[in-house]
Image (cartoon, rainbow, N blue to C red):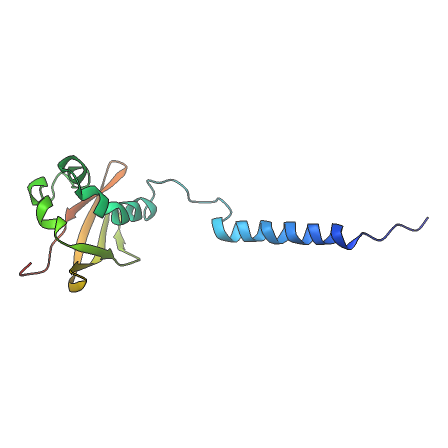
Length: 135
């Protein structure tokens, strides 16, 4: 008996399924070595990109300041005046990271500053967050 040729529709479903699987793996990775939100740099990225929303209250601002920080919760109103864009690929040195941050006022770049983040327990927090001179 001669086997029947697969229909074009059946072959198309297999191709679409394989392409979809390949796309998902490419987009999300194979699952090895990642996914833990406390891993650097993902937890550090979370800190950097959530920073603006954590300036709305003293409690939130305090939650991102390291215990030996040069910044205190009393400085929060000074940081509210500006907007920030962290640069990708912070310089990592163990549990310390140096992040280049563009500081803006009224959509004008005032300067690029080196902010220092340190890991306290399983959280990243800012140890140093200098603002440009004269701001």
